[in-house]
Length: 262
Image 1 (cartoon, one colour):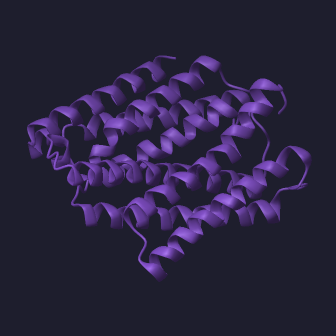
Image 2: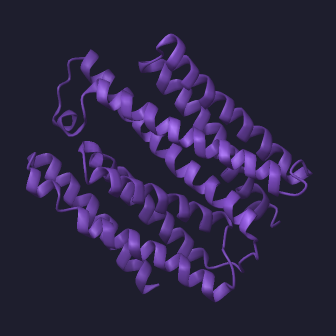
């Protein structure tokens, strides 16, 4: 629990330093968040590794999976935020990752499952896809907020923390493209390696995941073929992400927490 508390405090410190740096528009101050963020991500990962060693396998239950997605989001934000203006995402991502880690720690470690390399590959592809596409959803919200502020001529200070509108939009679609590839790999590995993929407790997850994949694919196709952007891109991104959340965490919540099934 000590590791968890330190990681949570470091996440919050990184978010606080980001807010201060962005408010001052100071390049030196705005980079101060990086070291506590790196340390928080490392401790977050270490807590999962230690839990897996104690339980004898990878814990992929609801709160553990949620925490791993938070870890992926925090790691991606730290990696790409260090080299550009997307560090602003950390103001939201780092507290969210801290809350997910704390929820995992309070719920406790669940006995790990003995997964072979094929199922582990499927699980890791899924978690990376969810983390990447969750970042895309946040970028879509930021794009919507920026467009709305510009239309209303509300030139507030937080706009300076964001890239120009066209750059933010381009980053959104690049992130969606990467997430789409990972989601494709998730569905392919699931079809190849997961037995009874269409069993009763997996059918809804499979259907919703495929619908989300189709929605993200349609958005990328619309961008390439018809130049979709702005509000259309935001709506499609958030709708596709909602389907993905329902597919994985919605089903896990019902099965594991409400129905007490594994």
